[in-house]
Image (cartoon, rainbow, N blue to C red; front, side, top):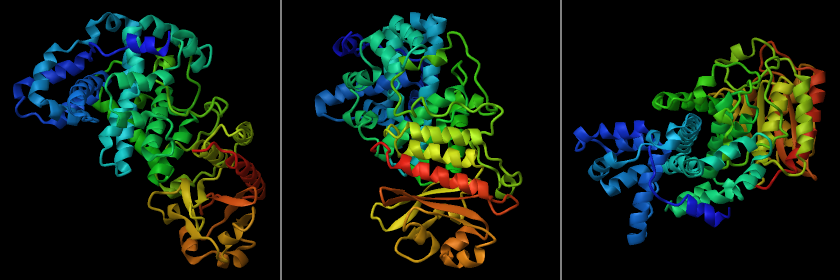
Length: 513
């Protein structure tokens, strides 16, 4: 089918909501004069179909009359009038009473899709709030609407959606979509939402032509987190999402990871009415392969709206149970984190080097390439505290962009220095070179470190190396194993320099944006 044919098939019309949504909204009837718009909006926002319903009705009505855009559910409820909306709730169609809702397989997929949409939307709203976005609900709504094409396919074309689920297991998603639908869900998504009267400003948030904007970066990362965490939290692709959010929020990665985990738990508790398990259910699991399940609705990604910029399939495979896992959960205290000295994992180091070489074609962006490099340094070399610092746009300073293993209250996470001086780190930025500060050279090198940085770092061994591309400085990597019992060694320093050299090549060929 063509795009126009699919737009006609999935055109606006009667839209069901989950039974829990309707029953909860009917519970507001006895106190319709006391209930607040926020109370009602919270119920609607837990149901992507209900959210689409209210936004479609209001934007179709207001847009045709006044050219007004309604981008949030709470605004839509106030514009329509809470009393009017509550009075109309009894006429809403219930999903569970429709044929697709009474088919066990289809209903499981719709519930799983709702879980994923809730998770992505909750994460997106929270990280938008942390980014001081005063209209964070707009980001939350955009996250919910991202999954609407998947819902409509299962509601209006269940046979095609079921066929797509099977094909997706045997071929790339885009190929499966083209073979089954004649088009990709990526090309269908924005025109379809536009046909449902979704405002242009919301569509702009879902357009992947603007990956450098903070809101789009947050959404893309949260879509990936919701997808990757569906089957456990040990997927190495999650690291790229954490790196992206850490960059946007200017927050240590450990804080980002902890926030993501807390959000997953909160949305699971808030929306416990869905019969499918939430992503938070897998947080206690240890790393290891997920057993394959026949006809598992979790594998129906192809019937869901496209996800934004996932790390290509050639990135490292999920960590096995016998392999030290990446630091996906922050250590409770600095001393405790370094009580057991980490051992380098040569296999992970080798995979990191291969992954960098495999993406010298520009197929990764900065966040994705940084995630690959940081994993190699952290897990492959057993380095517990890492700083990935980059030159600021004005070319005058080097400033921390990503960190691993550094406590939120540590001054070291604010690592920064001006270029043009004579201190040790400025000298490193003169050409691509590395240094290992240790007991043998401390008396000579430590005085060369500027006083503010000495206070941040503390007196201990560390590695540092500048990264250059074509004679131009682009970044600096700092690494240590804390200042406790875990020391650095010559073999790790050799591997550190080798990985930094390879990282410079990879960063010099990253995808624009």
